[in-house]
Image 1 (spheres, one colour):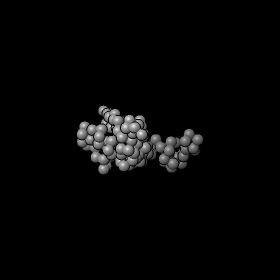
Image 2 (cartoon, one colour; image 1 turned 90 degrees about the vertical axis):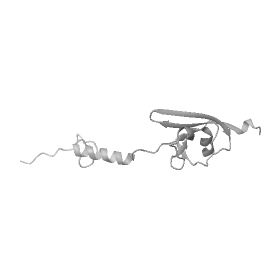
Image 3 (cartoon, helix red, strand yellow; image 1 turned 60 degrees about the vertical axis):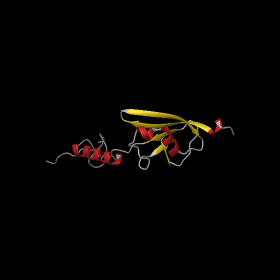
Image 4 (spheres, helix red, strand yellow; image 1 turned 135 degrees about the vertical axis):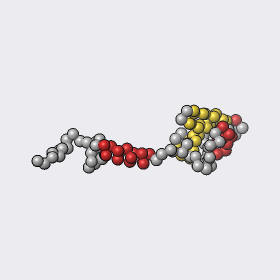
Length: 121
């Protein structure tokens, strides 16, 4: 195997709400995700990245730092979530229920086919 055939092209991507950066590298095919991230220089540009807490992935699939990658893979560094999506949905459903926009029994959209209760005289 020649030295050129052992090299692969990869990208390291980090996105902020206002800025997205792509670092393109040529590395040895046996390099781990962690080694590639360190070699890319992204940690120097964004010191807030902590590989012990930030999750990483390849094309939207979580991978461990000791994983290897293939030619033309994109390594993504994910930011931590600001809020738990389940908690946000629960609060939104509770607000809809309290404001009358949701069915009080099911919590879903009110059904036009459901019998409306009439006040007793």
